[in-house]
Amino acid sequence: NILRAAEAARVSNVVLCGITPGPPNSKVLKTALGAAEYVPHAHCGSTLDAVRDLQRQGVTVWACETTSKSQPMWETEMPQPLALVFGNELVGIEADVLEQCDGLVCIPTHGVKNSLNV
Image 1 (cartoon, one colour):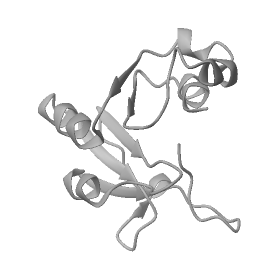
Image 2 (image 1 turned 135 degrees about the horizontal axis):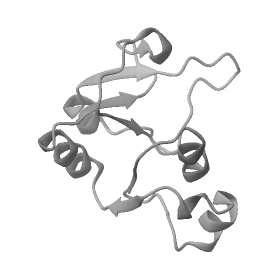
Image 3 (image 1 turned 180 degrees about the vertical axis):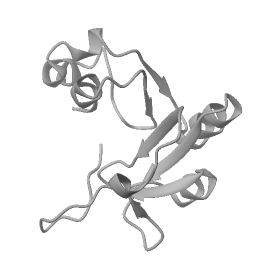
């Protein structure tokens, strides 16, 4: 659950986009185990609109996606403030969103699956 992960990492805000469900969805609340109460969250119908809005606010936005241009996240100096975009389980991050982001990073994985999605 992205809200549990965000709470554990002390993330200041989560923007859920597109088809990604969020509170008050009962399944999301069940798997969040109360974390939704501690992490401010909002929903935006379009990931591209959310990225552009964050950039207008002066936030650097990185796409977290496995591409030939992605740099391993742990080897990259993270600017502040920073927003990370994670893809959904069906299509990952859409091409127009990847192009709009300020950078591309990946979380190195060592299993059969080569990506983490939300």
